[in-house]
Length: 369
Image 1 (spheres, rainbow, N blue to C red):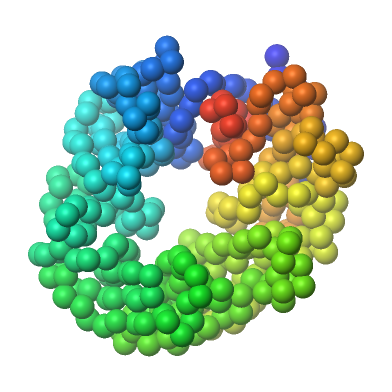
Image 2 (image 1 turned 180 degrees about the horizontal axis):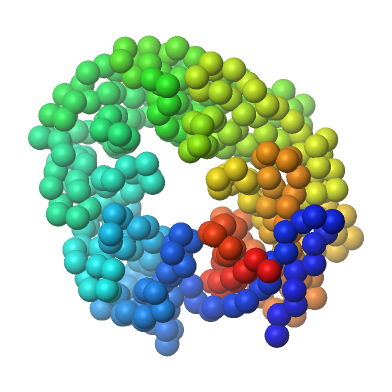
């Protein structure tokens, strides 16, 4: 039924598209478990091949509530539900599929934390997603971030380090450096790293700004503002380096020395690979690879909106694209409503498999040959 993916150049990885599953709303790439809708109304968790009804109110999607993502939490499975007005919910399931706990008005702190954020009328706190035990002895008036036992509260222009009572140890003002919304990248080498127009390193002991690293291709942004839409940063787990990604290229910063150790444009290092693509959204970091969604620029110029929707993998070590495939070929786009969506379609790598969900909530699964 499916054709084998043909490598674009000699030496590229080969994958076979093995499965296509409809109505998939959430996925855990690490395990292959997913949440899908059956009969147009009820949601089921596919847990190790077993179908479990996790939706006891089939009308909830009409009210603006649906499963957003799945995460493994210790030996449990967490299903996050996106609710209206930010009232998100987390369901905790045992590995056998039995519902273990439910938390309301909570938010994820990210994969670096074993806790979740709790928000109610009294403020914010950290809680255990297993037994619901609160970490701080009092609520605080700002969102929370936790990593390796270090707790931070943050608002639009300030970051506070907190102790376990919720009292403030220090406050760092970002008024002088923050011109827009910032993102916390992570902690490495005694610094809390955040992404602004520049990358900022805040000393976790003193709260002082110790490093301010160059924005990812800011000079290109000034010259070509219509092309430079956005950028993002990740912390690579293996060496705690910061990987700064724009639509033009990559900068890699050593967080131990605060120096830029690599900087290149995609078109310069891999002109026939990733450099030949127009991205729908920024590439994301997975291990030591970037995965991306887009279309070849030549195909885009020839067929405009009817160009094929592709996904690919770029290896940061070799600086070469190692795989690419037209997930939704141009001919299929002309006759169906299937599209890869800039907001929700991300290519995930897990062992010998690749996963991606399209605009119609169809999950495509590839397996290495």
